[in-house]
Image (cartoon, rainbow, N blue to C red; front, side, top):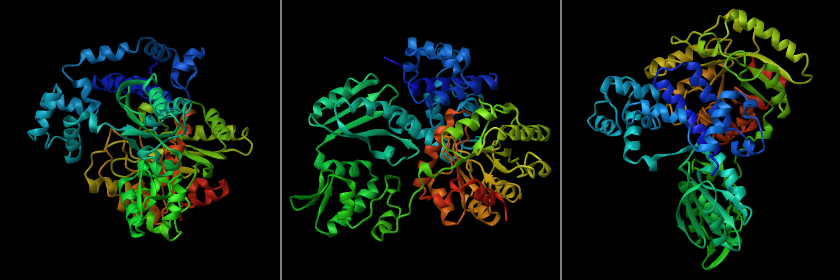
Length: 570
């Protein structure tokens, strides 16, 4: 069976973790992580590309060596380097890096300080409280580790981008024997992580649809099979629940299985006020179905405007829908440009011109080039002299782009004390400055907050990049008072970023909503380090929609002239 893109990406991620654990060259580690992101974001499977004779070394950040390794994985189903790295490590250390809340550095700390070698050692360490007082292991992290050790399978969740990569070909596979095939659940609500895939389909022969799912090449286990419901587990560990429903109940089933549970309960209570019953089969008055074929039909019968799936969390959306006051949520087509893009001047995979042309081909009118500042030595960050050289290079690129514009920017590091990594004399020359935290994630809450607030008060800072520093499933958000950060952004006129990189999706929806309510403007940006990563903008828009953002709340929905005015600090 072909090895799926998500599986190859996971192998490369784990390889990077184990290389990191063993103190290997950071550039080699970064190469594997970058390759994992490239593979994960490909629009087609690696298997089909190899079958078509495509040279994988042409992909950004891959090269001949990694292309050969990918071909090896597709041919054998194994990655020899990863297998050998696991053998070199004592006990279960290789497996520990995959646990929520852990990672190579924390695993190494456990081994060095507490001699934790196996999962049983880790269980005992958690239960006896020996982690208390160990730097980097706060109550939240320890709780997550404990939960993962008790129920590792039940706790496993998949990033939305990984679930999407699994879902798209699976839906296409089922559409050959069914119609109206859609993934419901938290996937349809576009949550940042997904526990399983709930797939609904309409078909005359439900058993045939279930049989086709069971025979899907990526299925590792069939757990249940019946005339209308089939459950399988994919090789990645992602569970898929298929339900085949009649056309007259399709809308009711889609509403029910999309959720959330709290939203569904609220809808059922409205139905009860009318002496009706709402369930997965329809909306009923007595035994008579009065709605159910579409979601719109059910919402309308309940006296509500249609509520987009991203808002269905029982967070006030029902009251607004009842009063016809739901916000018009931002859409991907509203985005006019990308304000956080990297090039091969630092750790990006492509030239400035290549990134600009790719963004232009996506319909954008501008990008902001925001390569790293000098503190990120591993990324060959820019010092003041190289910033000046890059500005001249941007001018040369802009001369050839016609109506498209590359804005001159930087992603400047926020240092431990809140100062910035480059002098004001350099920052003042730029069109845009993204200030970000890339170090000292474990500062106490008040120090982390004061650090960022100080940076926001620098008059040259335009945008706070990935504001909480989280990496989904890898690193928790640092401990920071987001209410204070939002208040500082409002005072200073600084913009907060919704980082669309699937590993980050930072801000989360709650903080994005709070920023909107406070009158703070936001930018949705990809943090793209390659041409393919520009396509991740859709994940940032998903996150913004979950935060109730409309086009007016997001600065990069504006034409360039208006954007420039918004970037000027008051």
